[in-house]
Image (tube, rainbow, N blue to C red; front, side, top):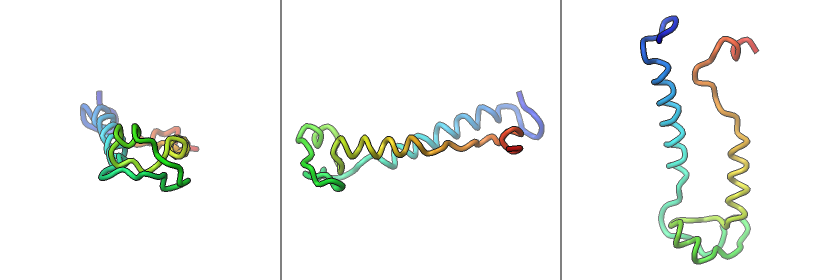
Length: 88
């Protein structure tokens, strides 16, 4: 179903683009290379099991959890731009 100036399937394309953007963001944040022995933020030793499970890791579990919580508080963006959101 299209609406206004959009073509059939435009809504599905927006959904797919949003999912693809999210996947690219997550993939860009995956660590690469050799893991560090100590956390780059607090200096604590990173356990061997974590370094083996996640190659390229740079942060200890506590610092990574803190960073993840900060990212979750970032507001999402409305790709569609409904009339209601434009009126606010």
